[in-house]
Amino acid sequence: MILGVVLAGGKSSRFGSDKALAELDGHTLIARAVDALSGWCEYVVVAGRAAAPAPTLPDWPAPGMGPLAGLAAALHLARDEGYEAVLSLGVDTAGLPDNLPEWLGAETVGASAPFQPAYITSQPVIGLWPGSTIKAIEAILTGTGKHSLCALVEAIGARAVTLPSPPANINTPADLAALQGNR
Image (tube, rainbow, N blue to C red):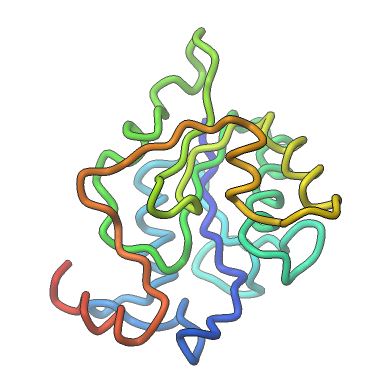
């Protein structure tokens, strides 16, 4: 079983307002991310927000620690509820392939072969993380080094996946405007 998490705890400083509530083709970015994960995962949560169109989790161990803290919160829930892996997306992601879990190796979850963590090279926030990843994340978040997904993928040797068409990363209103009507 796979738990889906939308990482939505950012400050949207480059966007200028709460980008999770910005609309792309008539739907908020947060609703689009939840809907995408709902098609691939047994259960979906949103990390880093108090209100969302899915159940919410506070970042772990504290807010303001970046997407890694949202992923940590989801991995704690996955461990506690018996999920084998977490599929993560940023709230500001658009243009994902329909078979994203296959690209990340989700078909191996629950199989006899060892499951390997994987992420999208253009956006490491998009990834498939086995439950065992939690130990490395806890070490990074409670340590003195950089609290980043790049530090995590290096620490655990995650597999980098390059998609033929990289998904959009919406950081500014101009990024959003460029996508309107193209999805």
